[in-house]
Length: 159
Image (spheres, rainbow, N blue to C red):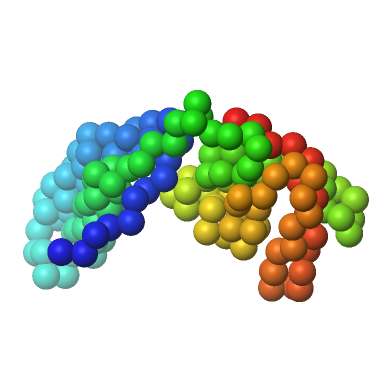
């Protein structure tokens, strides 16, 4: 059997996954079961698009539940107490200066499961996240992105 990759999560990320799983198992499953029940009441299942749609939705929900359960079995929780503020690690909050545009940005480096660039949470597997890992305050980091190269200067690292 193949060894599965650990899913890196913060406490907040773990809670979100557990809440999503609970929602799907309790509320969403009941909603789908009700849709199927209503669709069956329309009769003739061979030409019943409501039934087909509800069964497809049920399959997608069950697949998502299995995916979340598998992820939760392989969780590696990031302990903020273990984080160093000397070097960027997964879980670190990093304030950087875009050298070209003289613009400050703040990111939190997280596992790919929790990544949400709009909230400043970038994956340790993304080009920027990968480039920042292991570097310290004052260091300048070059990041290869589709548009070329960006230079960031690390201003601050926090937990």
